[in-house]
Image 1 (cartoon, rainbow, N blue to C red):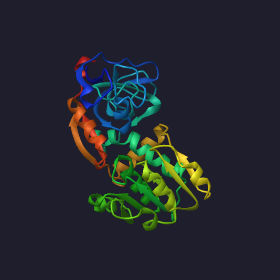
Image 2 (cartoon, one colour):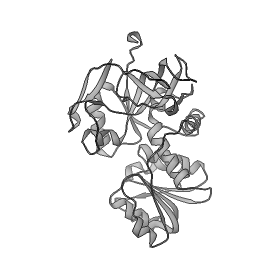
Image 3 (spheres, rainbow, N blue to C red):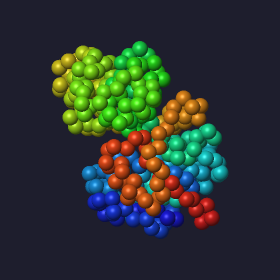
Image 4 (tube, rainbow, N blue to C red):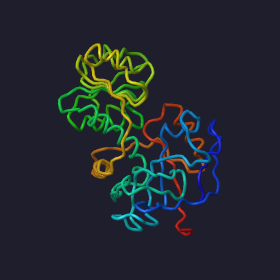
Length: 306
């Protein structure tokens, strides 16, 4: 098969498009002929060596494709599935445990399905599992136009929350169009004064953004972050609950979110679809931090070699 391999850490050009041995599914796993994968920040953090990874490695976890071989109950060859690959998704073939995938609804494209797993599960779990967001509450979402943020805005709005998105001026109309009731341009407006008293703040950005969000949370409220250590001491001083979320794969949640996409209740924003061979450019775009929605790697499958 063809795959994108990383033999060393460094800049995007360390990603090499080359021939590789296909992975073999174990009991309880399926082999997927990949149609699409997506790029997440953790991918380029591995590439930069910010997190340990055994080399050589195929990066990527978000995957959508067709079951080429099944060694798992509940999945048959020829079924379209999506979820999280364990062998690396930047490849024409990938392996995934049955518990980390779900059937792709017919009304969802492979590109849309590949955009869902990491970003949408992260948004869902931050808002509802950790944030306990309820109808009528006020939610503040940083990075509202990004891969995770654009899902979070829609989930929170659909749940009946009053949503304020944070981002740059160019994304104002996009985020309001997703269901946000208000928008704060962090480049020219003070977040704490424009969005004071929120019940839940969701931080997808980190750095200085975290303390700005904390200042907007009401006493006794909650801040959930995925972008660094939560400000526990500063939060505790005001009775604010500070949570760090590390996403936990849930096939049932995957299926539920995909159904919302298929029904047109949730929109998947795709910044760009890039051929698998262009993974280096995809990483550079993702690392810029200014993309709207998700970056997708379009993969040509190799069923004939299976």
